[in-house]
Image 1 (spheres, rainbow, N blue to C red):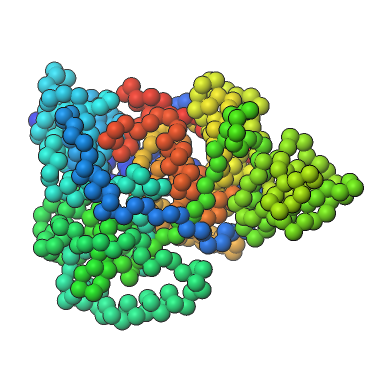
Image 2 (spheres, rainbow, N blue to C red):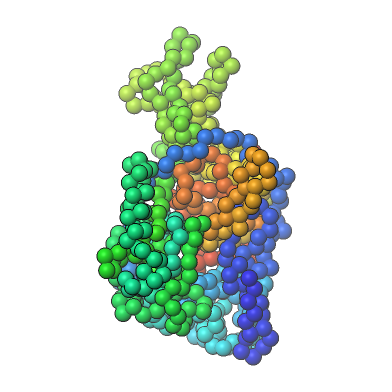
Length: 554
C-alpha cells in the first residue's frame, strides 16, 4: 500500500507506510524498503528444493521466559543520565533518511516508539534540506529524521513514547512475548464488561468453551496458561481513555473496538493485567486483547553451540547432530571388529564431537564419538550410525569474495546446518529449517549479503488455494514482530521461528528458520551491528557498513 504524503513546502512523495515493513519468505523480489530489492552483488544460483523430507517435530521444549516487562520498565527508568539529545517516534515504523529529503529511494533504516535515537547536534540547518513540517535532525551514526513528520519527536515524555519505553526487551531471547489468535477484537481502550458483551457476545460461554478445549489436550501438548506474568493495569489504561496506539490514524478518539485479529494472526505482546475478573494483554501496537482468545506460544529452547579455537577448551568441529524427532541415535560399541548396540543413545537435537575418520561396516557408515557417553567405559570406542546423526565438518577453503577476517555464514540445505565463521575459523554451529521443498517453498542457492536487518518485522502471505490432489495449498498468515530478521534475497531471510521446534528438518516457506536463542546470537554477531536507537537498517546504503555474506548450498 502506497500513501501519498505531502511535504510542507514541496511536492508529494510516496512513502510505504504499510507494505515496506511486511516480509513474506518468498524467494522472489519483495523489497521492504522502496527502491532497494535484492542487491546487485547477490549471485543467486539455480533455485533448488532441500533434498530431505523427514518427520515433523514434536511439541517444542519451552524456552526460559523473558524478564517480566515491569522489571524491564524499571531498568529503563533507572538508566544513567545522558546529556546527548535524543529523538523517538510515536508511530511504527518511522523512517531514517540518507539525506534531509523525503526521497523514497533514500530510506536507510527505521526506528520505533520507545527507542531513543541519539542525534549529532542541534537542529540541522544545512543548505541541502528539503523543508519539512518541523525540524531536521542528523542522527548517529548517519542519516536524518524530521521532527513533526511521521511521529518523530524530541519530547520523550510524549504519552506514546513513554508507554513504549520498556519494550522491545533486549535482554531475553525474544523482544516480545507471542500468542496465536482464535479470532479476537483489538480493543482501542480498556472495555467495560458491557462493551465486551456488545462486541463479543456471551463472553462467559466463550471462556467456558475455551477452557474445555484446553482441558481435552494431553498435558504435554497444552500451551502455557499465560504468555506473560500478570501485572498491574498500565497507567495509560486506568481511566479507560484511548490507548496510545502506535499506528498512524489512531491519534483521535474512536469506538472501543479498533480492529480484529482473525485466526491467521500471531500477535506480539508486551504486558498482561486483570480487569473485572478477566485477563487482558497489551499488544506491541498497544491494542488490548482478551487473554482467553489467544493461545500463548511455546518457543523452542533449542540452541546451537559455540565452536572453540583449535587447541583451546570447548567444542570443536566435526560434530554430529541428531535431527530426527522420533529417531534417537543409538550408540554402538566396536568390539572384535563388530558393532554392538549399547543402552546409550543421543536424543533429539543432541550433538557430540566426532573424530576425523568414519568407519564403514556392512555398507553402513559410522561416526566415531570423540568421548564416551556418560556411564560407558571410557577406554572403549563408540559410534553412531550416519543415517541417525548428521555430520558437520568445517569448510576447507574460503568461498569467492570472502576475505580472511570476514564474518560470514555457511548454510547446508541437505544437512540443515548453519555455521558462523570468521574467515576459516568456525565460531558457532546450529540446526535450521529451510524451505520445505513443496510447491513454491524453496530456499534459493547462492551467495548473498545481508541487505536488511530488523530487530522485529511483520511477516505475512495471502495464502494459496490447492491446485489438485496432493497439493494442500497454503493458509494465509500474519506474524507480528518476527524477531531478529536478516534479509538475504527478495523476501528470504534468516529469522526466529518461535512457532515450532523442528530445527534440522525443512519446513519453512523459503526462509532460514532458527531458534529464538540462535536468531538473536546471529543477529548480534553478523555484520553490521544495529546502531544505537535503530530498529532496522539497510546495510551498504549511504555509508552504512556492508552486511555479512551468507553462502547457501546443498
